[in-house]
Image (cartoon, rainbow, N blue to C red; front, side):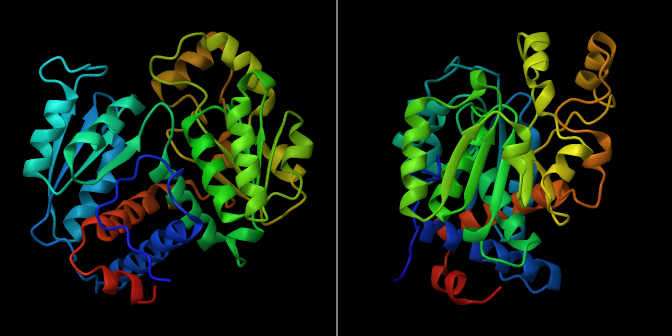
Amino acid sequence: MSISLRGRSVLTLDEFTSGEIGFLLHIAARVKAEKRRGNEIPLLSGKNIALLCEEGSMNALFGSAVAAFDQGARVVGLTLPAGHGGQCASLKDMARVLGRIYNAVEYCGRSQSAVEELAAYARVPVYNGSSEECHPIQALADFLTMQEAVDKPLQEVTLAFLGDGRSPIARSLATGAAKLGMDFRTVSPPIFWPAPSFIDDVTSEAHENDGSFTVLEHVGAGVLGADFVYTAAWLGEQEAGWAERIRLLAPFGVRANVMEATGNPGCKFMHCLPAFHNSGSKAGARVAKQFGLDCMEVSDTVFESKASVVFDQAENRMHTIKAIFIATIGDRETDARDRDP
């Protein structure tokens, strides 16, 4: 069956089927191979893409800019004050202006409602680079990374996420893994488990696709047999209640013993970055001084180990958003679909 995503927005993974996710991963793998061979075919010539980001979130858009340039598109980066709330113009008005000028808009910030409002009124594809609720583009990049790192289909992969199970990346990974039929485990303190309604929906979706979704608090049971152990930053730039979060999440940090507990010598470590694996950042230095910890969600030993694929993930965000650009606003979608990686 032919798949077309032309004109579609990417706000969450909820509205995508397993076939559509696989379609995007296929395009991403192909353009990545073409870029490395030096024979990439531009499919976005003459297109204009706006990259909207709130202050402090620009890093997530670097790969998007290169992805657009590689494919022949022009990009303009626009920075909004954090929590802008339509200070200068309403989002509805902004969306209608951007939609008349640009072929697509990528938003990276905190508000899920903001990216949804942009999509409702722009009349062009809108992409959620990151929000307080979900992180779909990162999750797609992570599935591409897993696809590259193991010699088996994603339907046979076991992924364990340790830390805050309510975090945007944990939720997006759970949703995507359920659609792909993976064995996904959220391992965290009960206070950080996702909402019961989310657990029920994802569990049902996983079962329909011959996968599984489990929420548990015992690290040993959660990581046993895992192909990938994933974690994310415990703290944001403006995080309140640092001491309590660190106290609750400390037993779920990924150390060498956690990787060993998988019983899988080929298990890989994943992190969506930024990572507090030492005291090299401002936040890391503050935690080291205030709480006497030299790392938080992952140790430097694991982060820098051969098992770590974190920088493959970071690179693959560029290939994934490129695939999304091609599939939704590209000139020759058939070429994008039919050529092999």
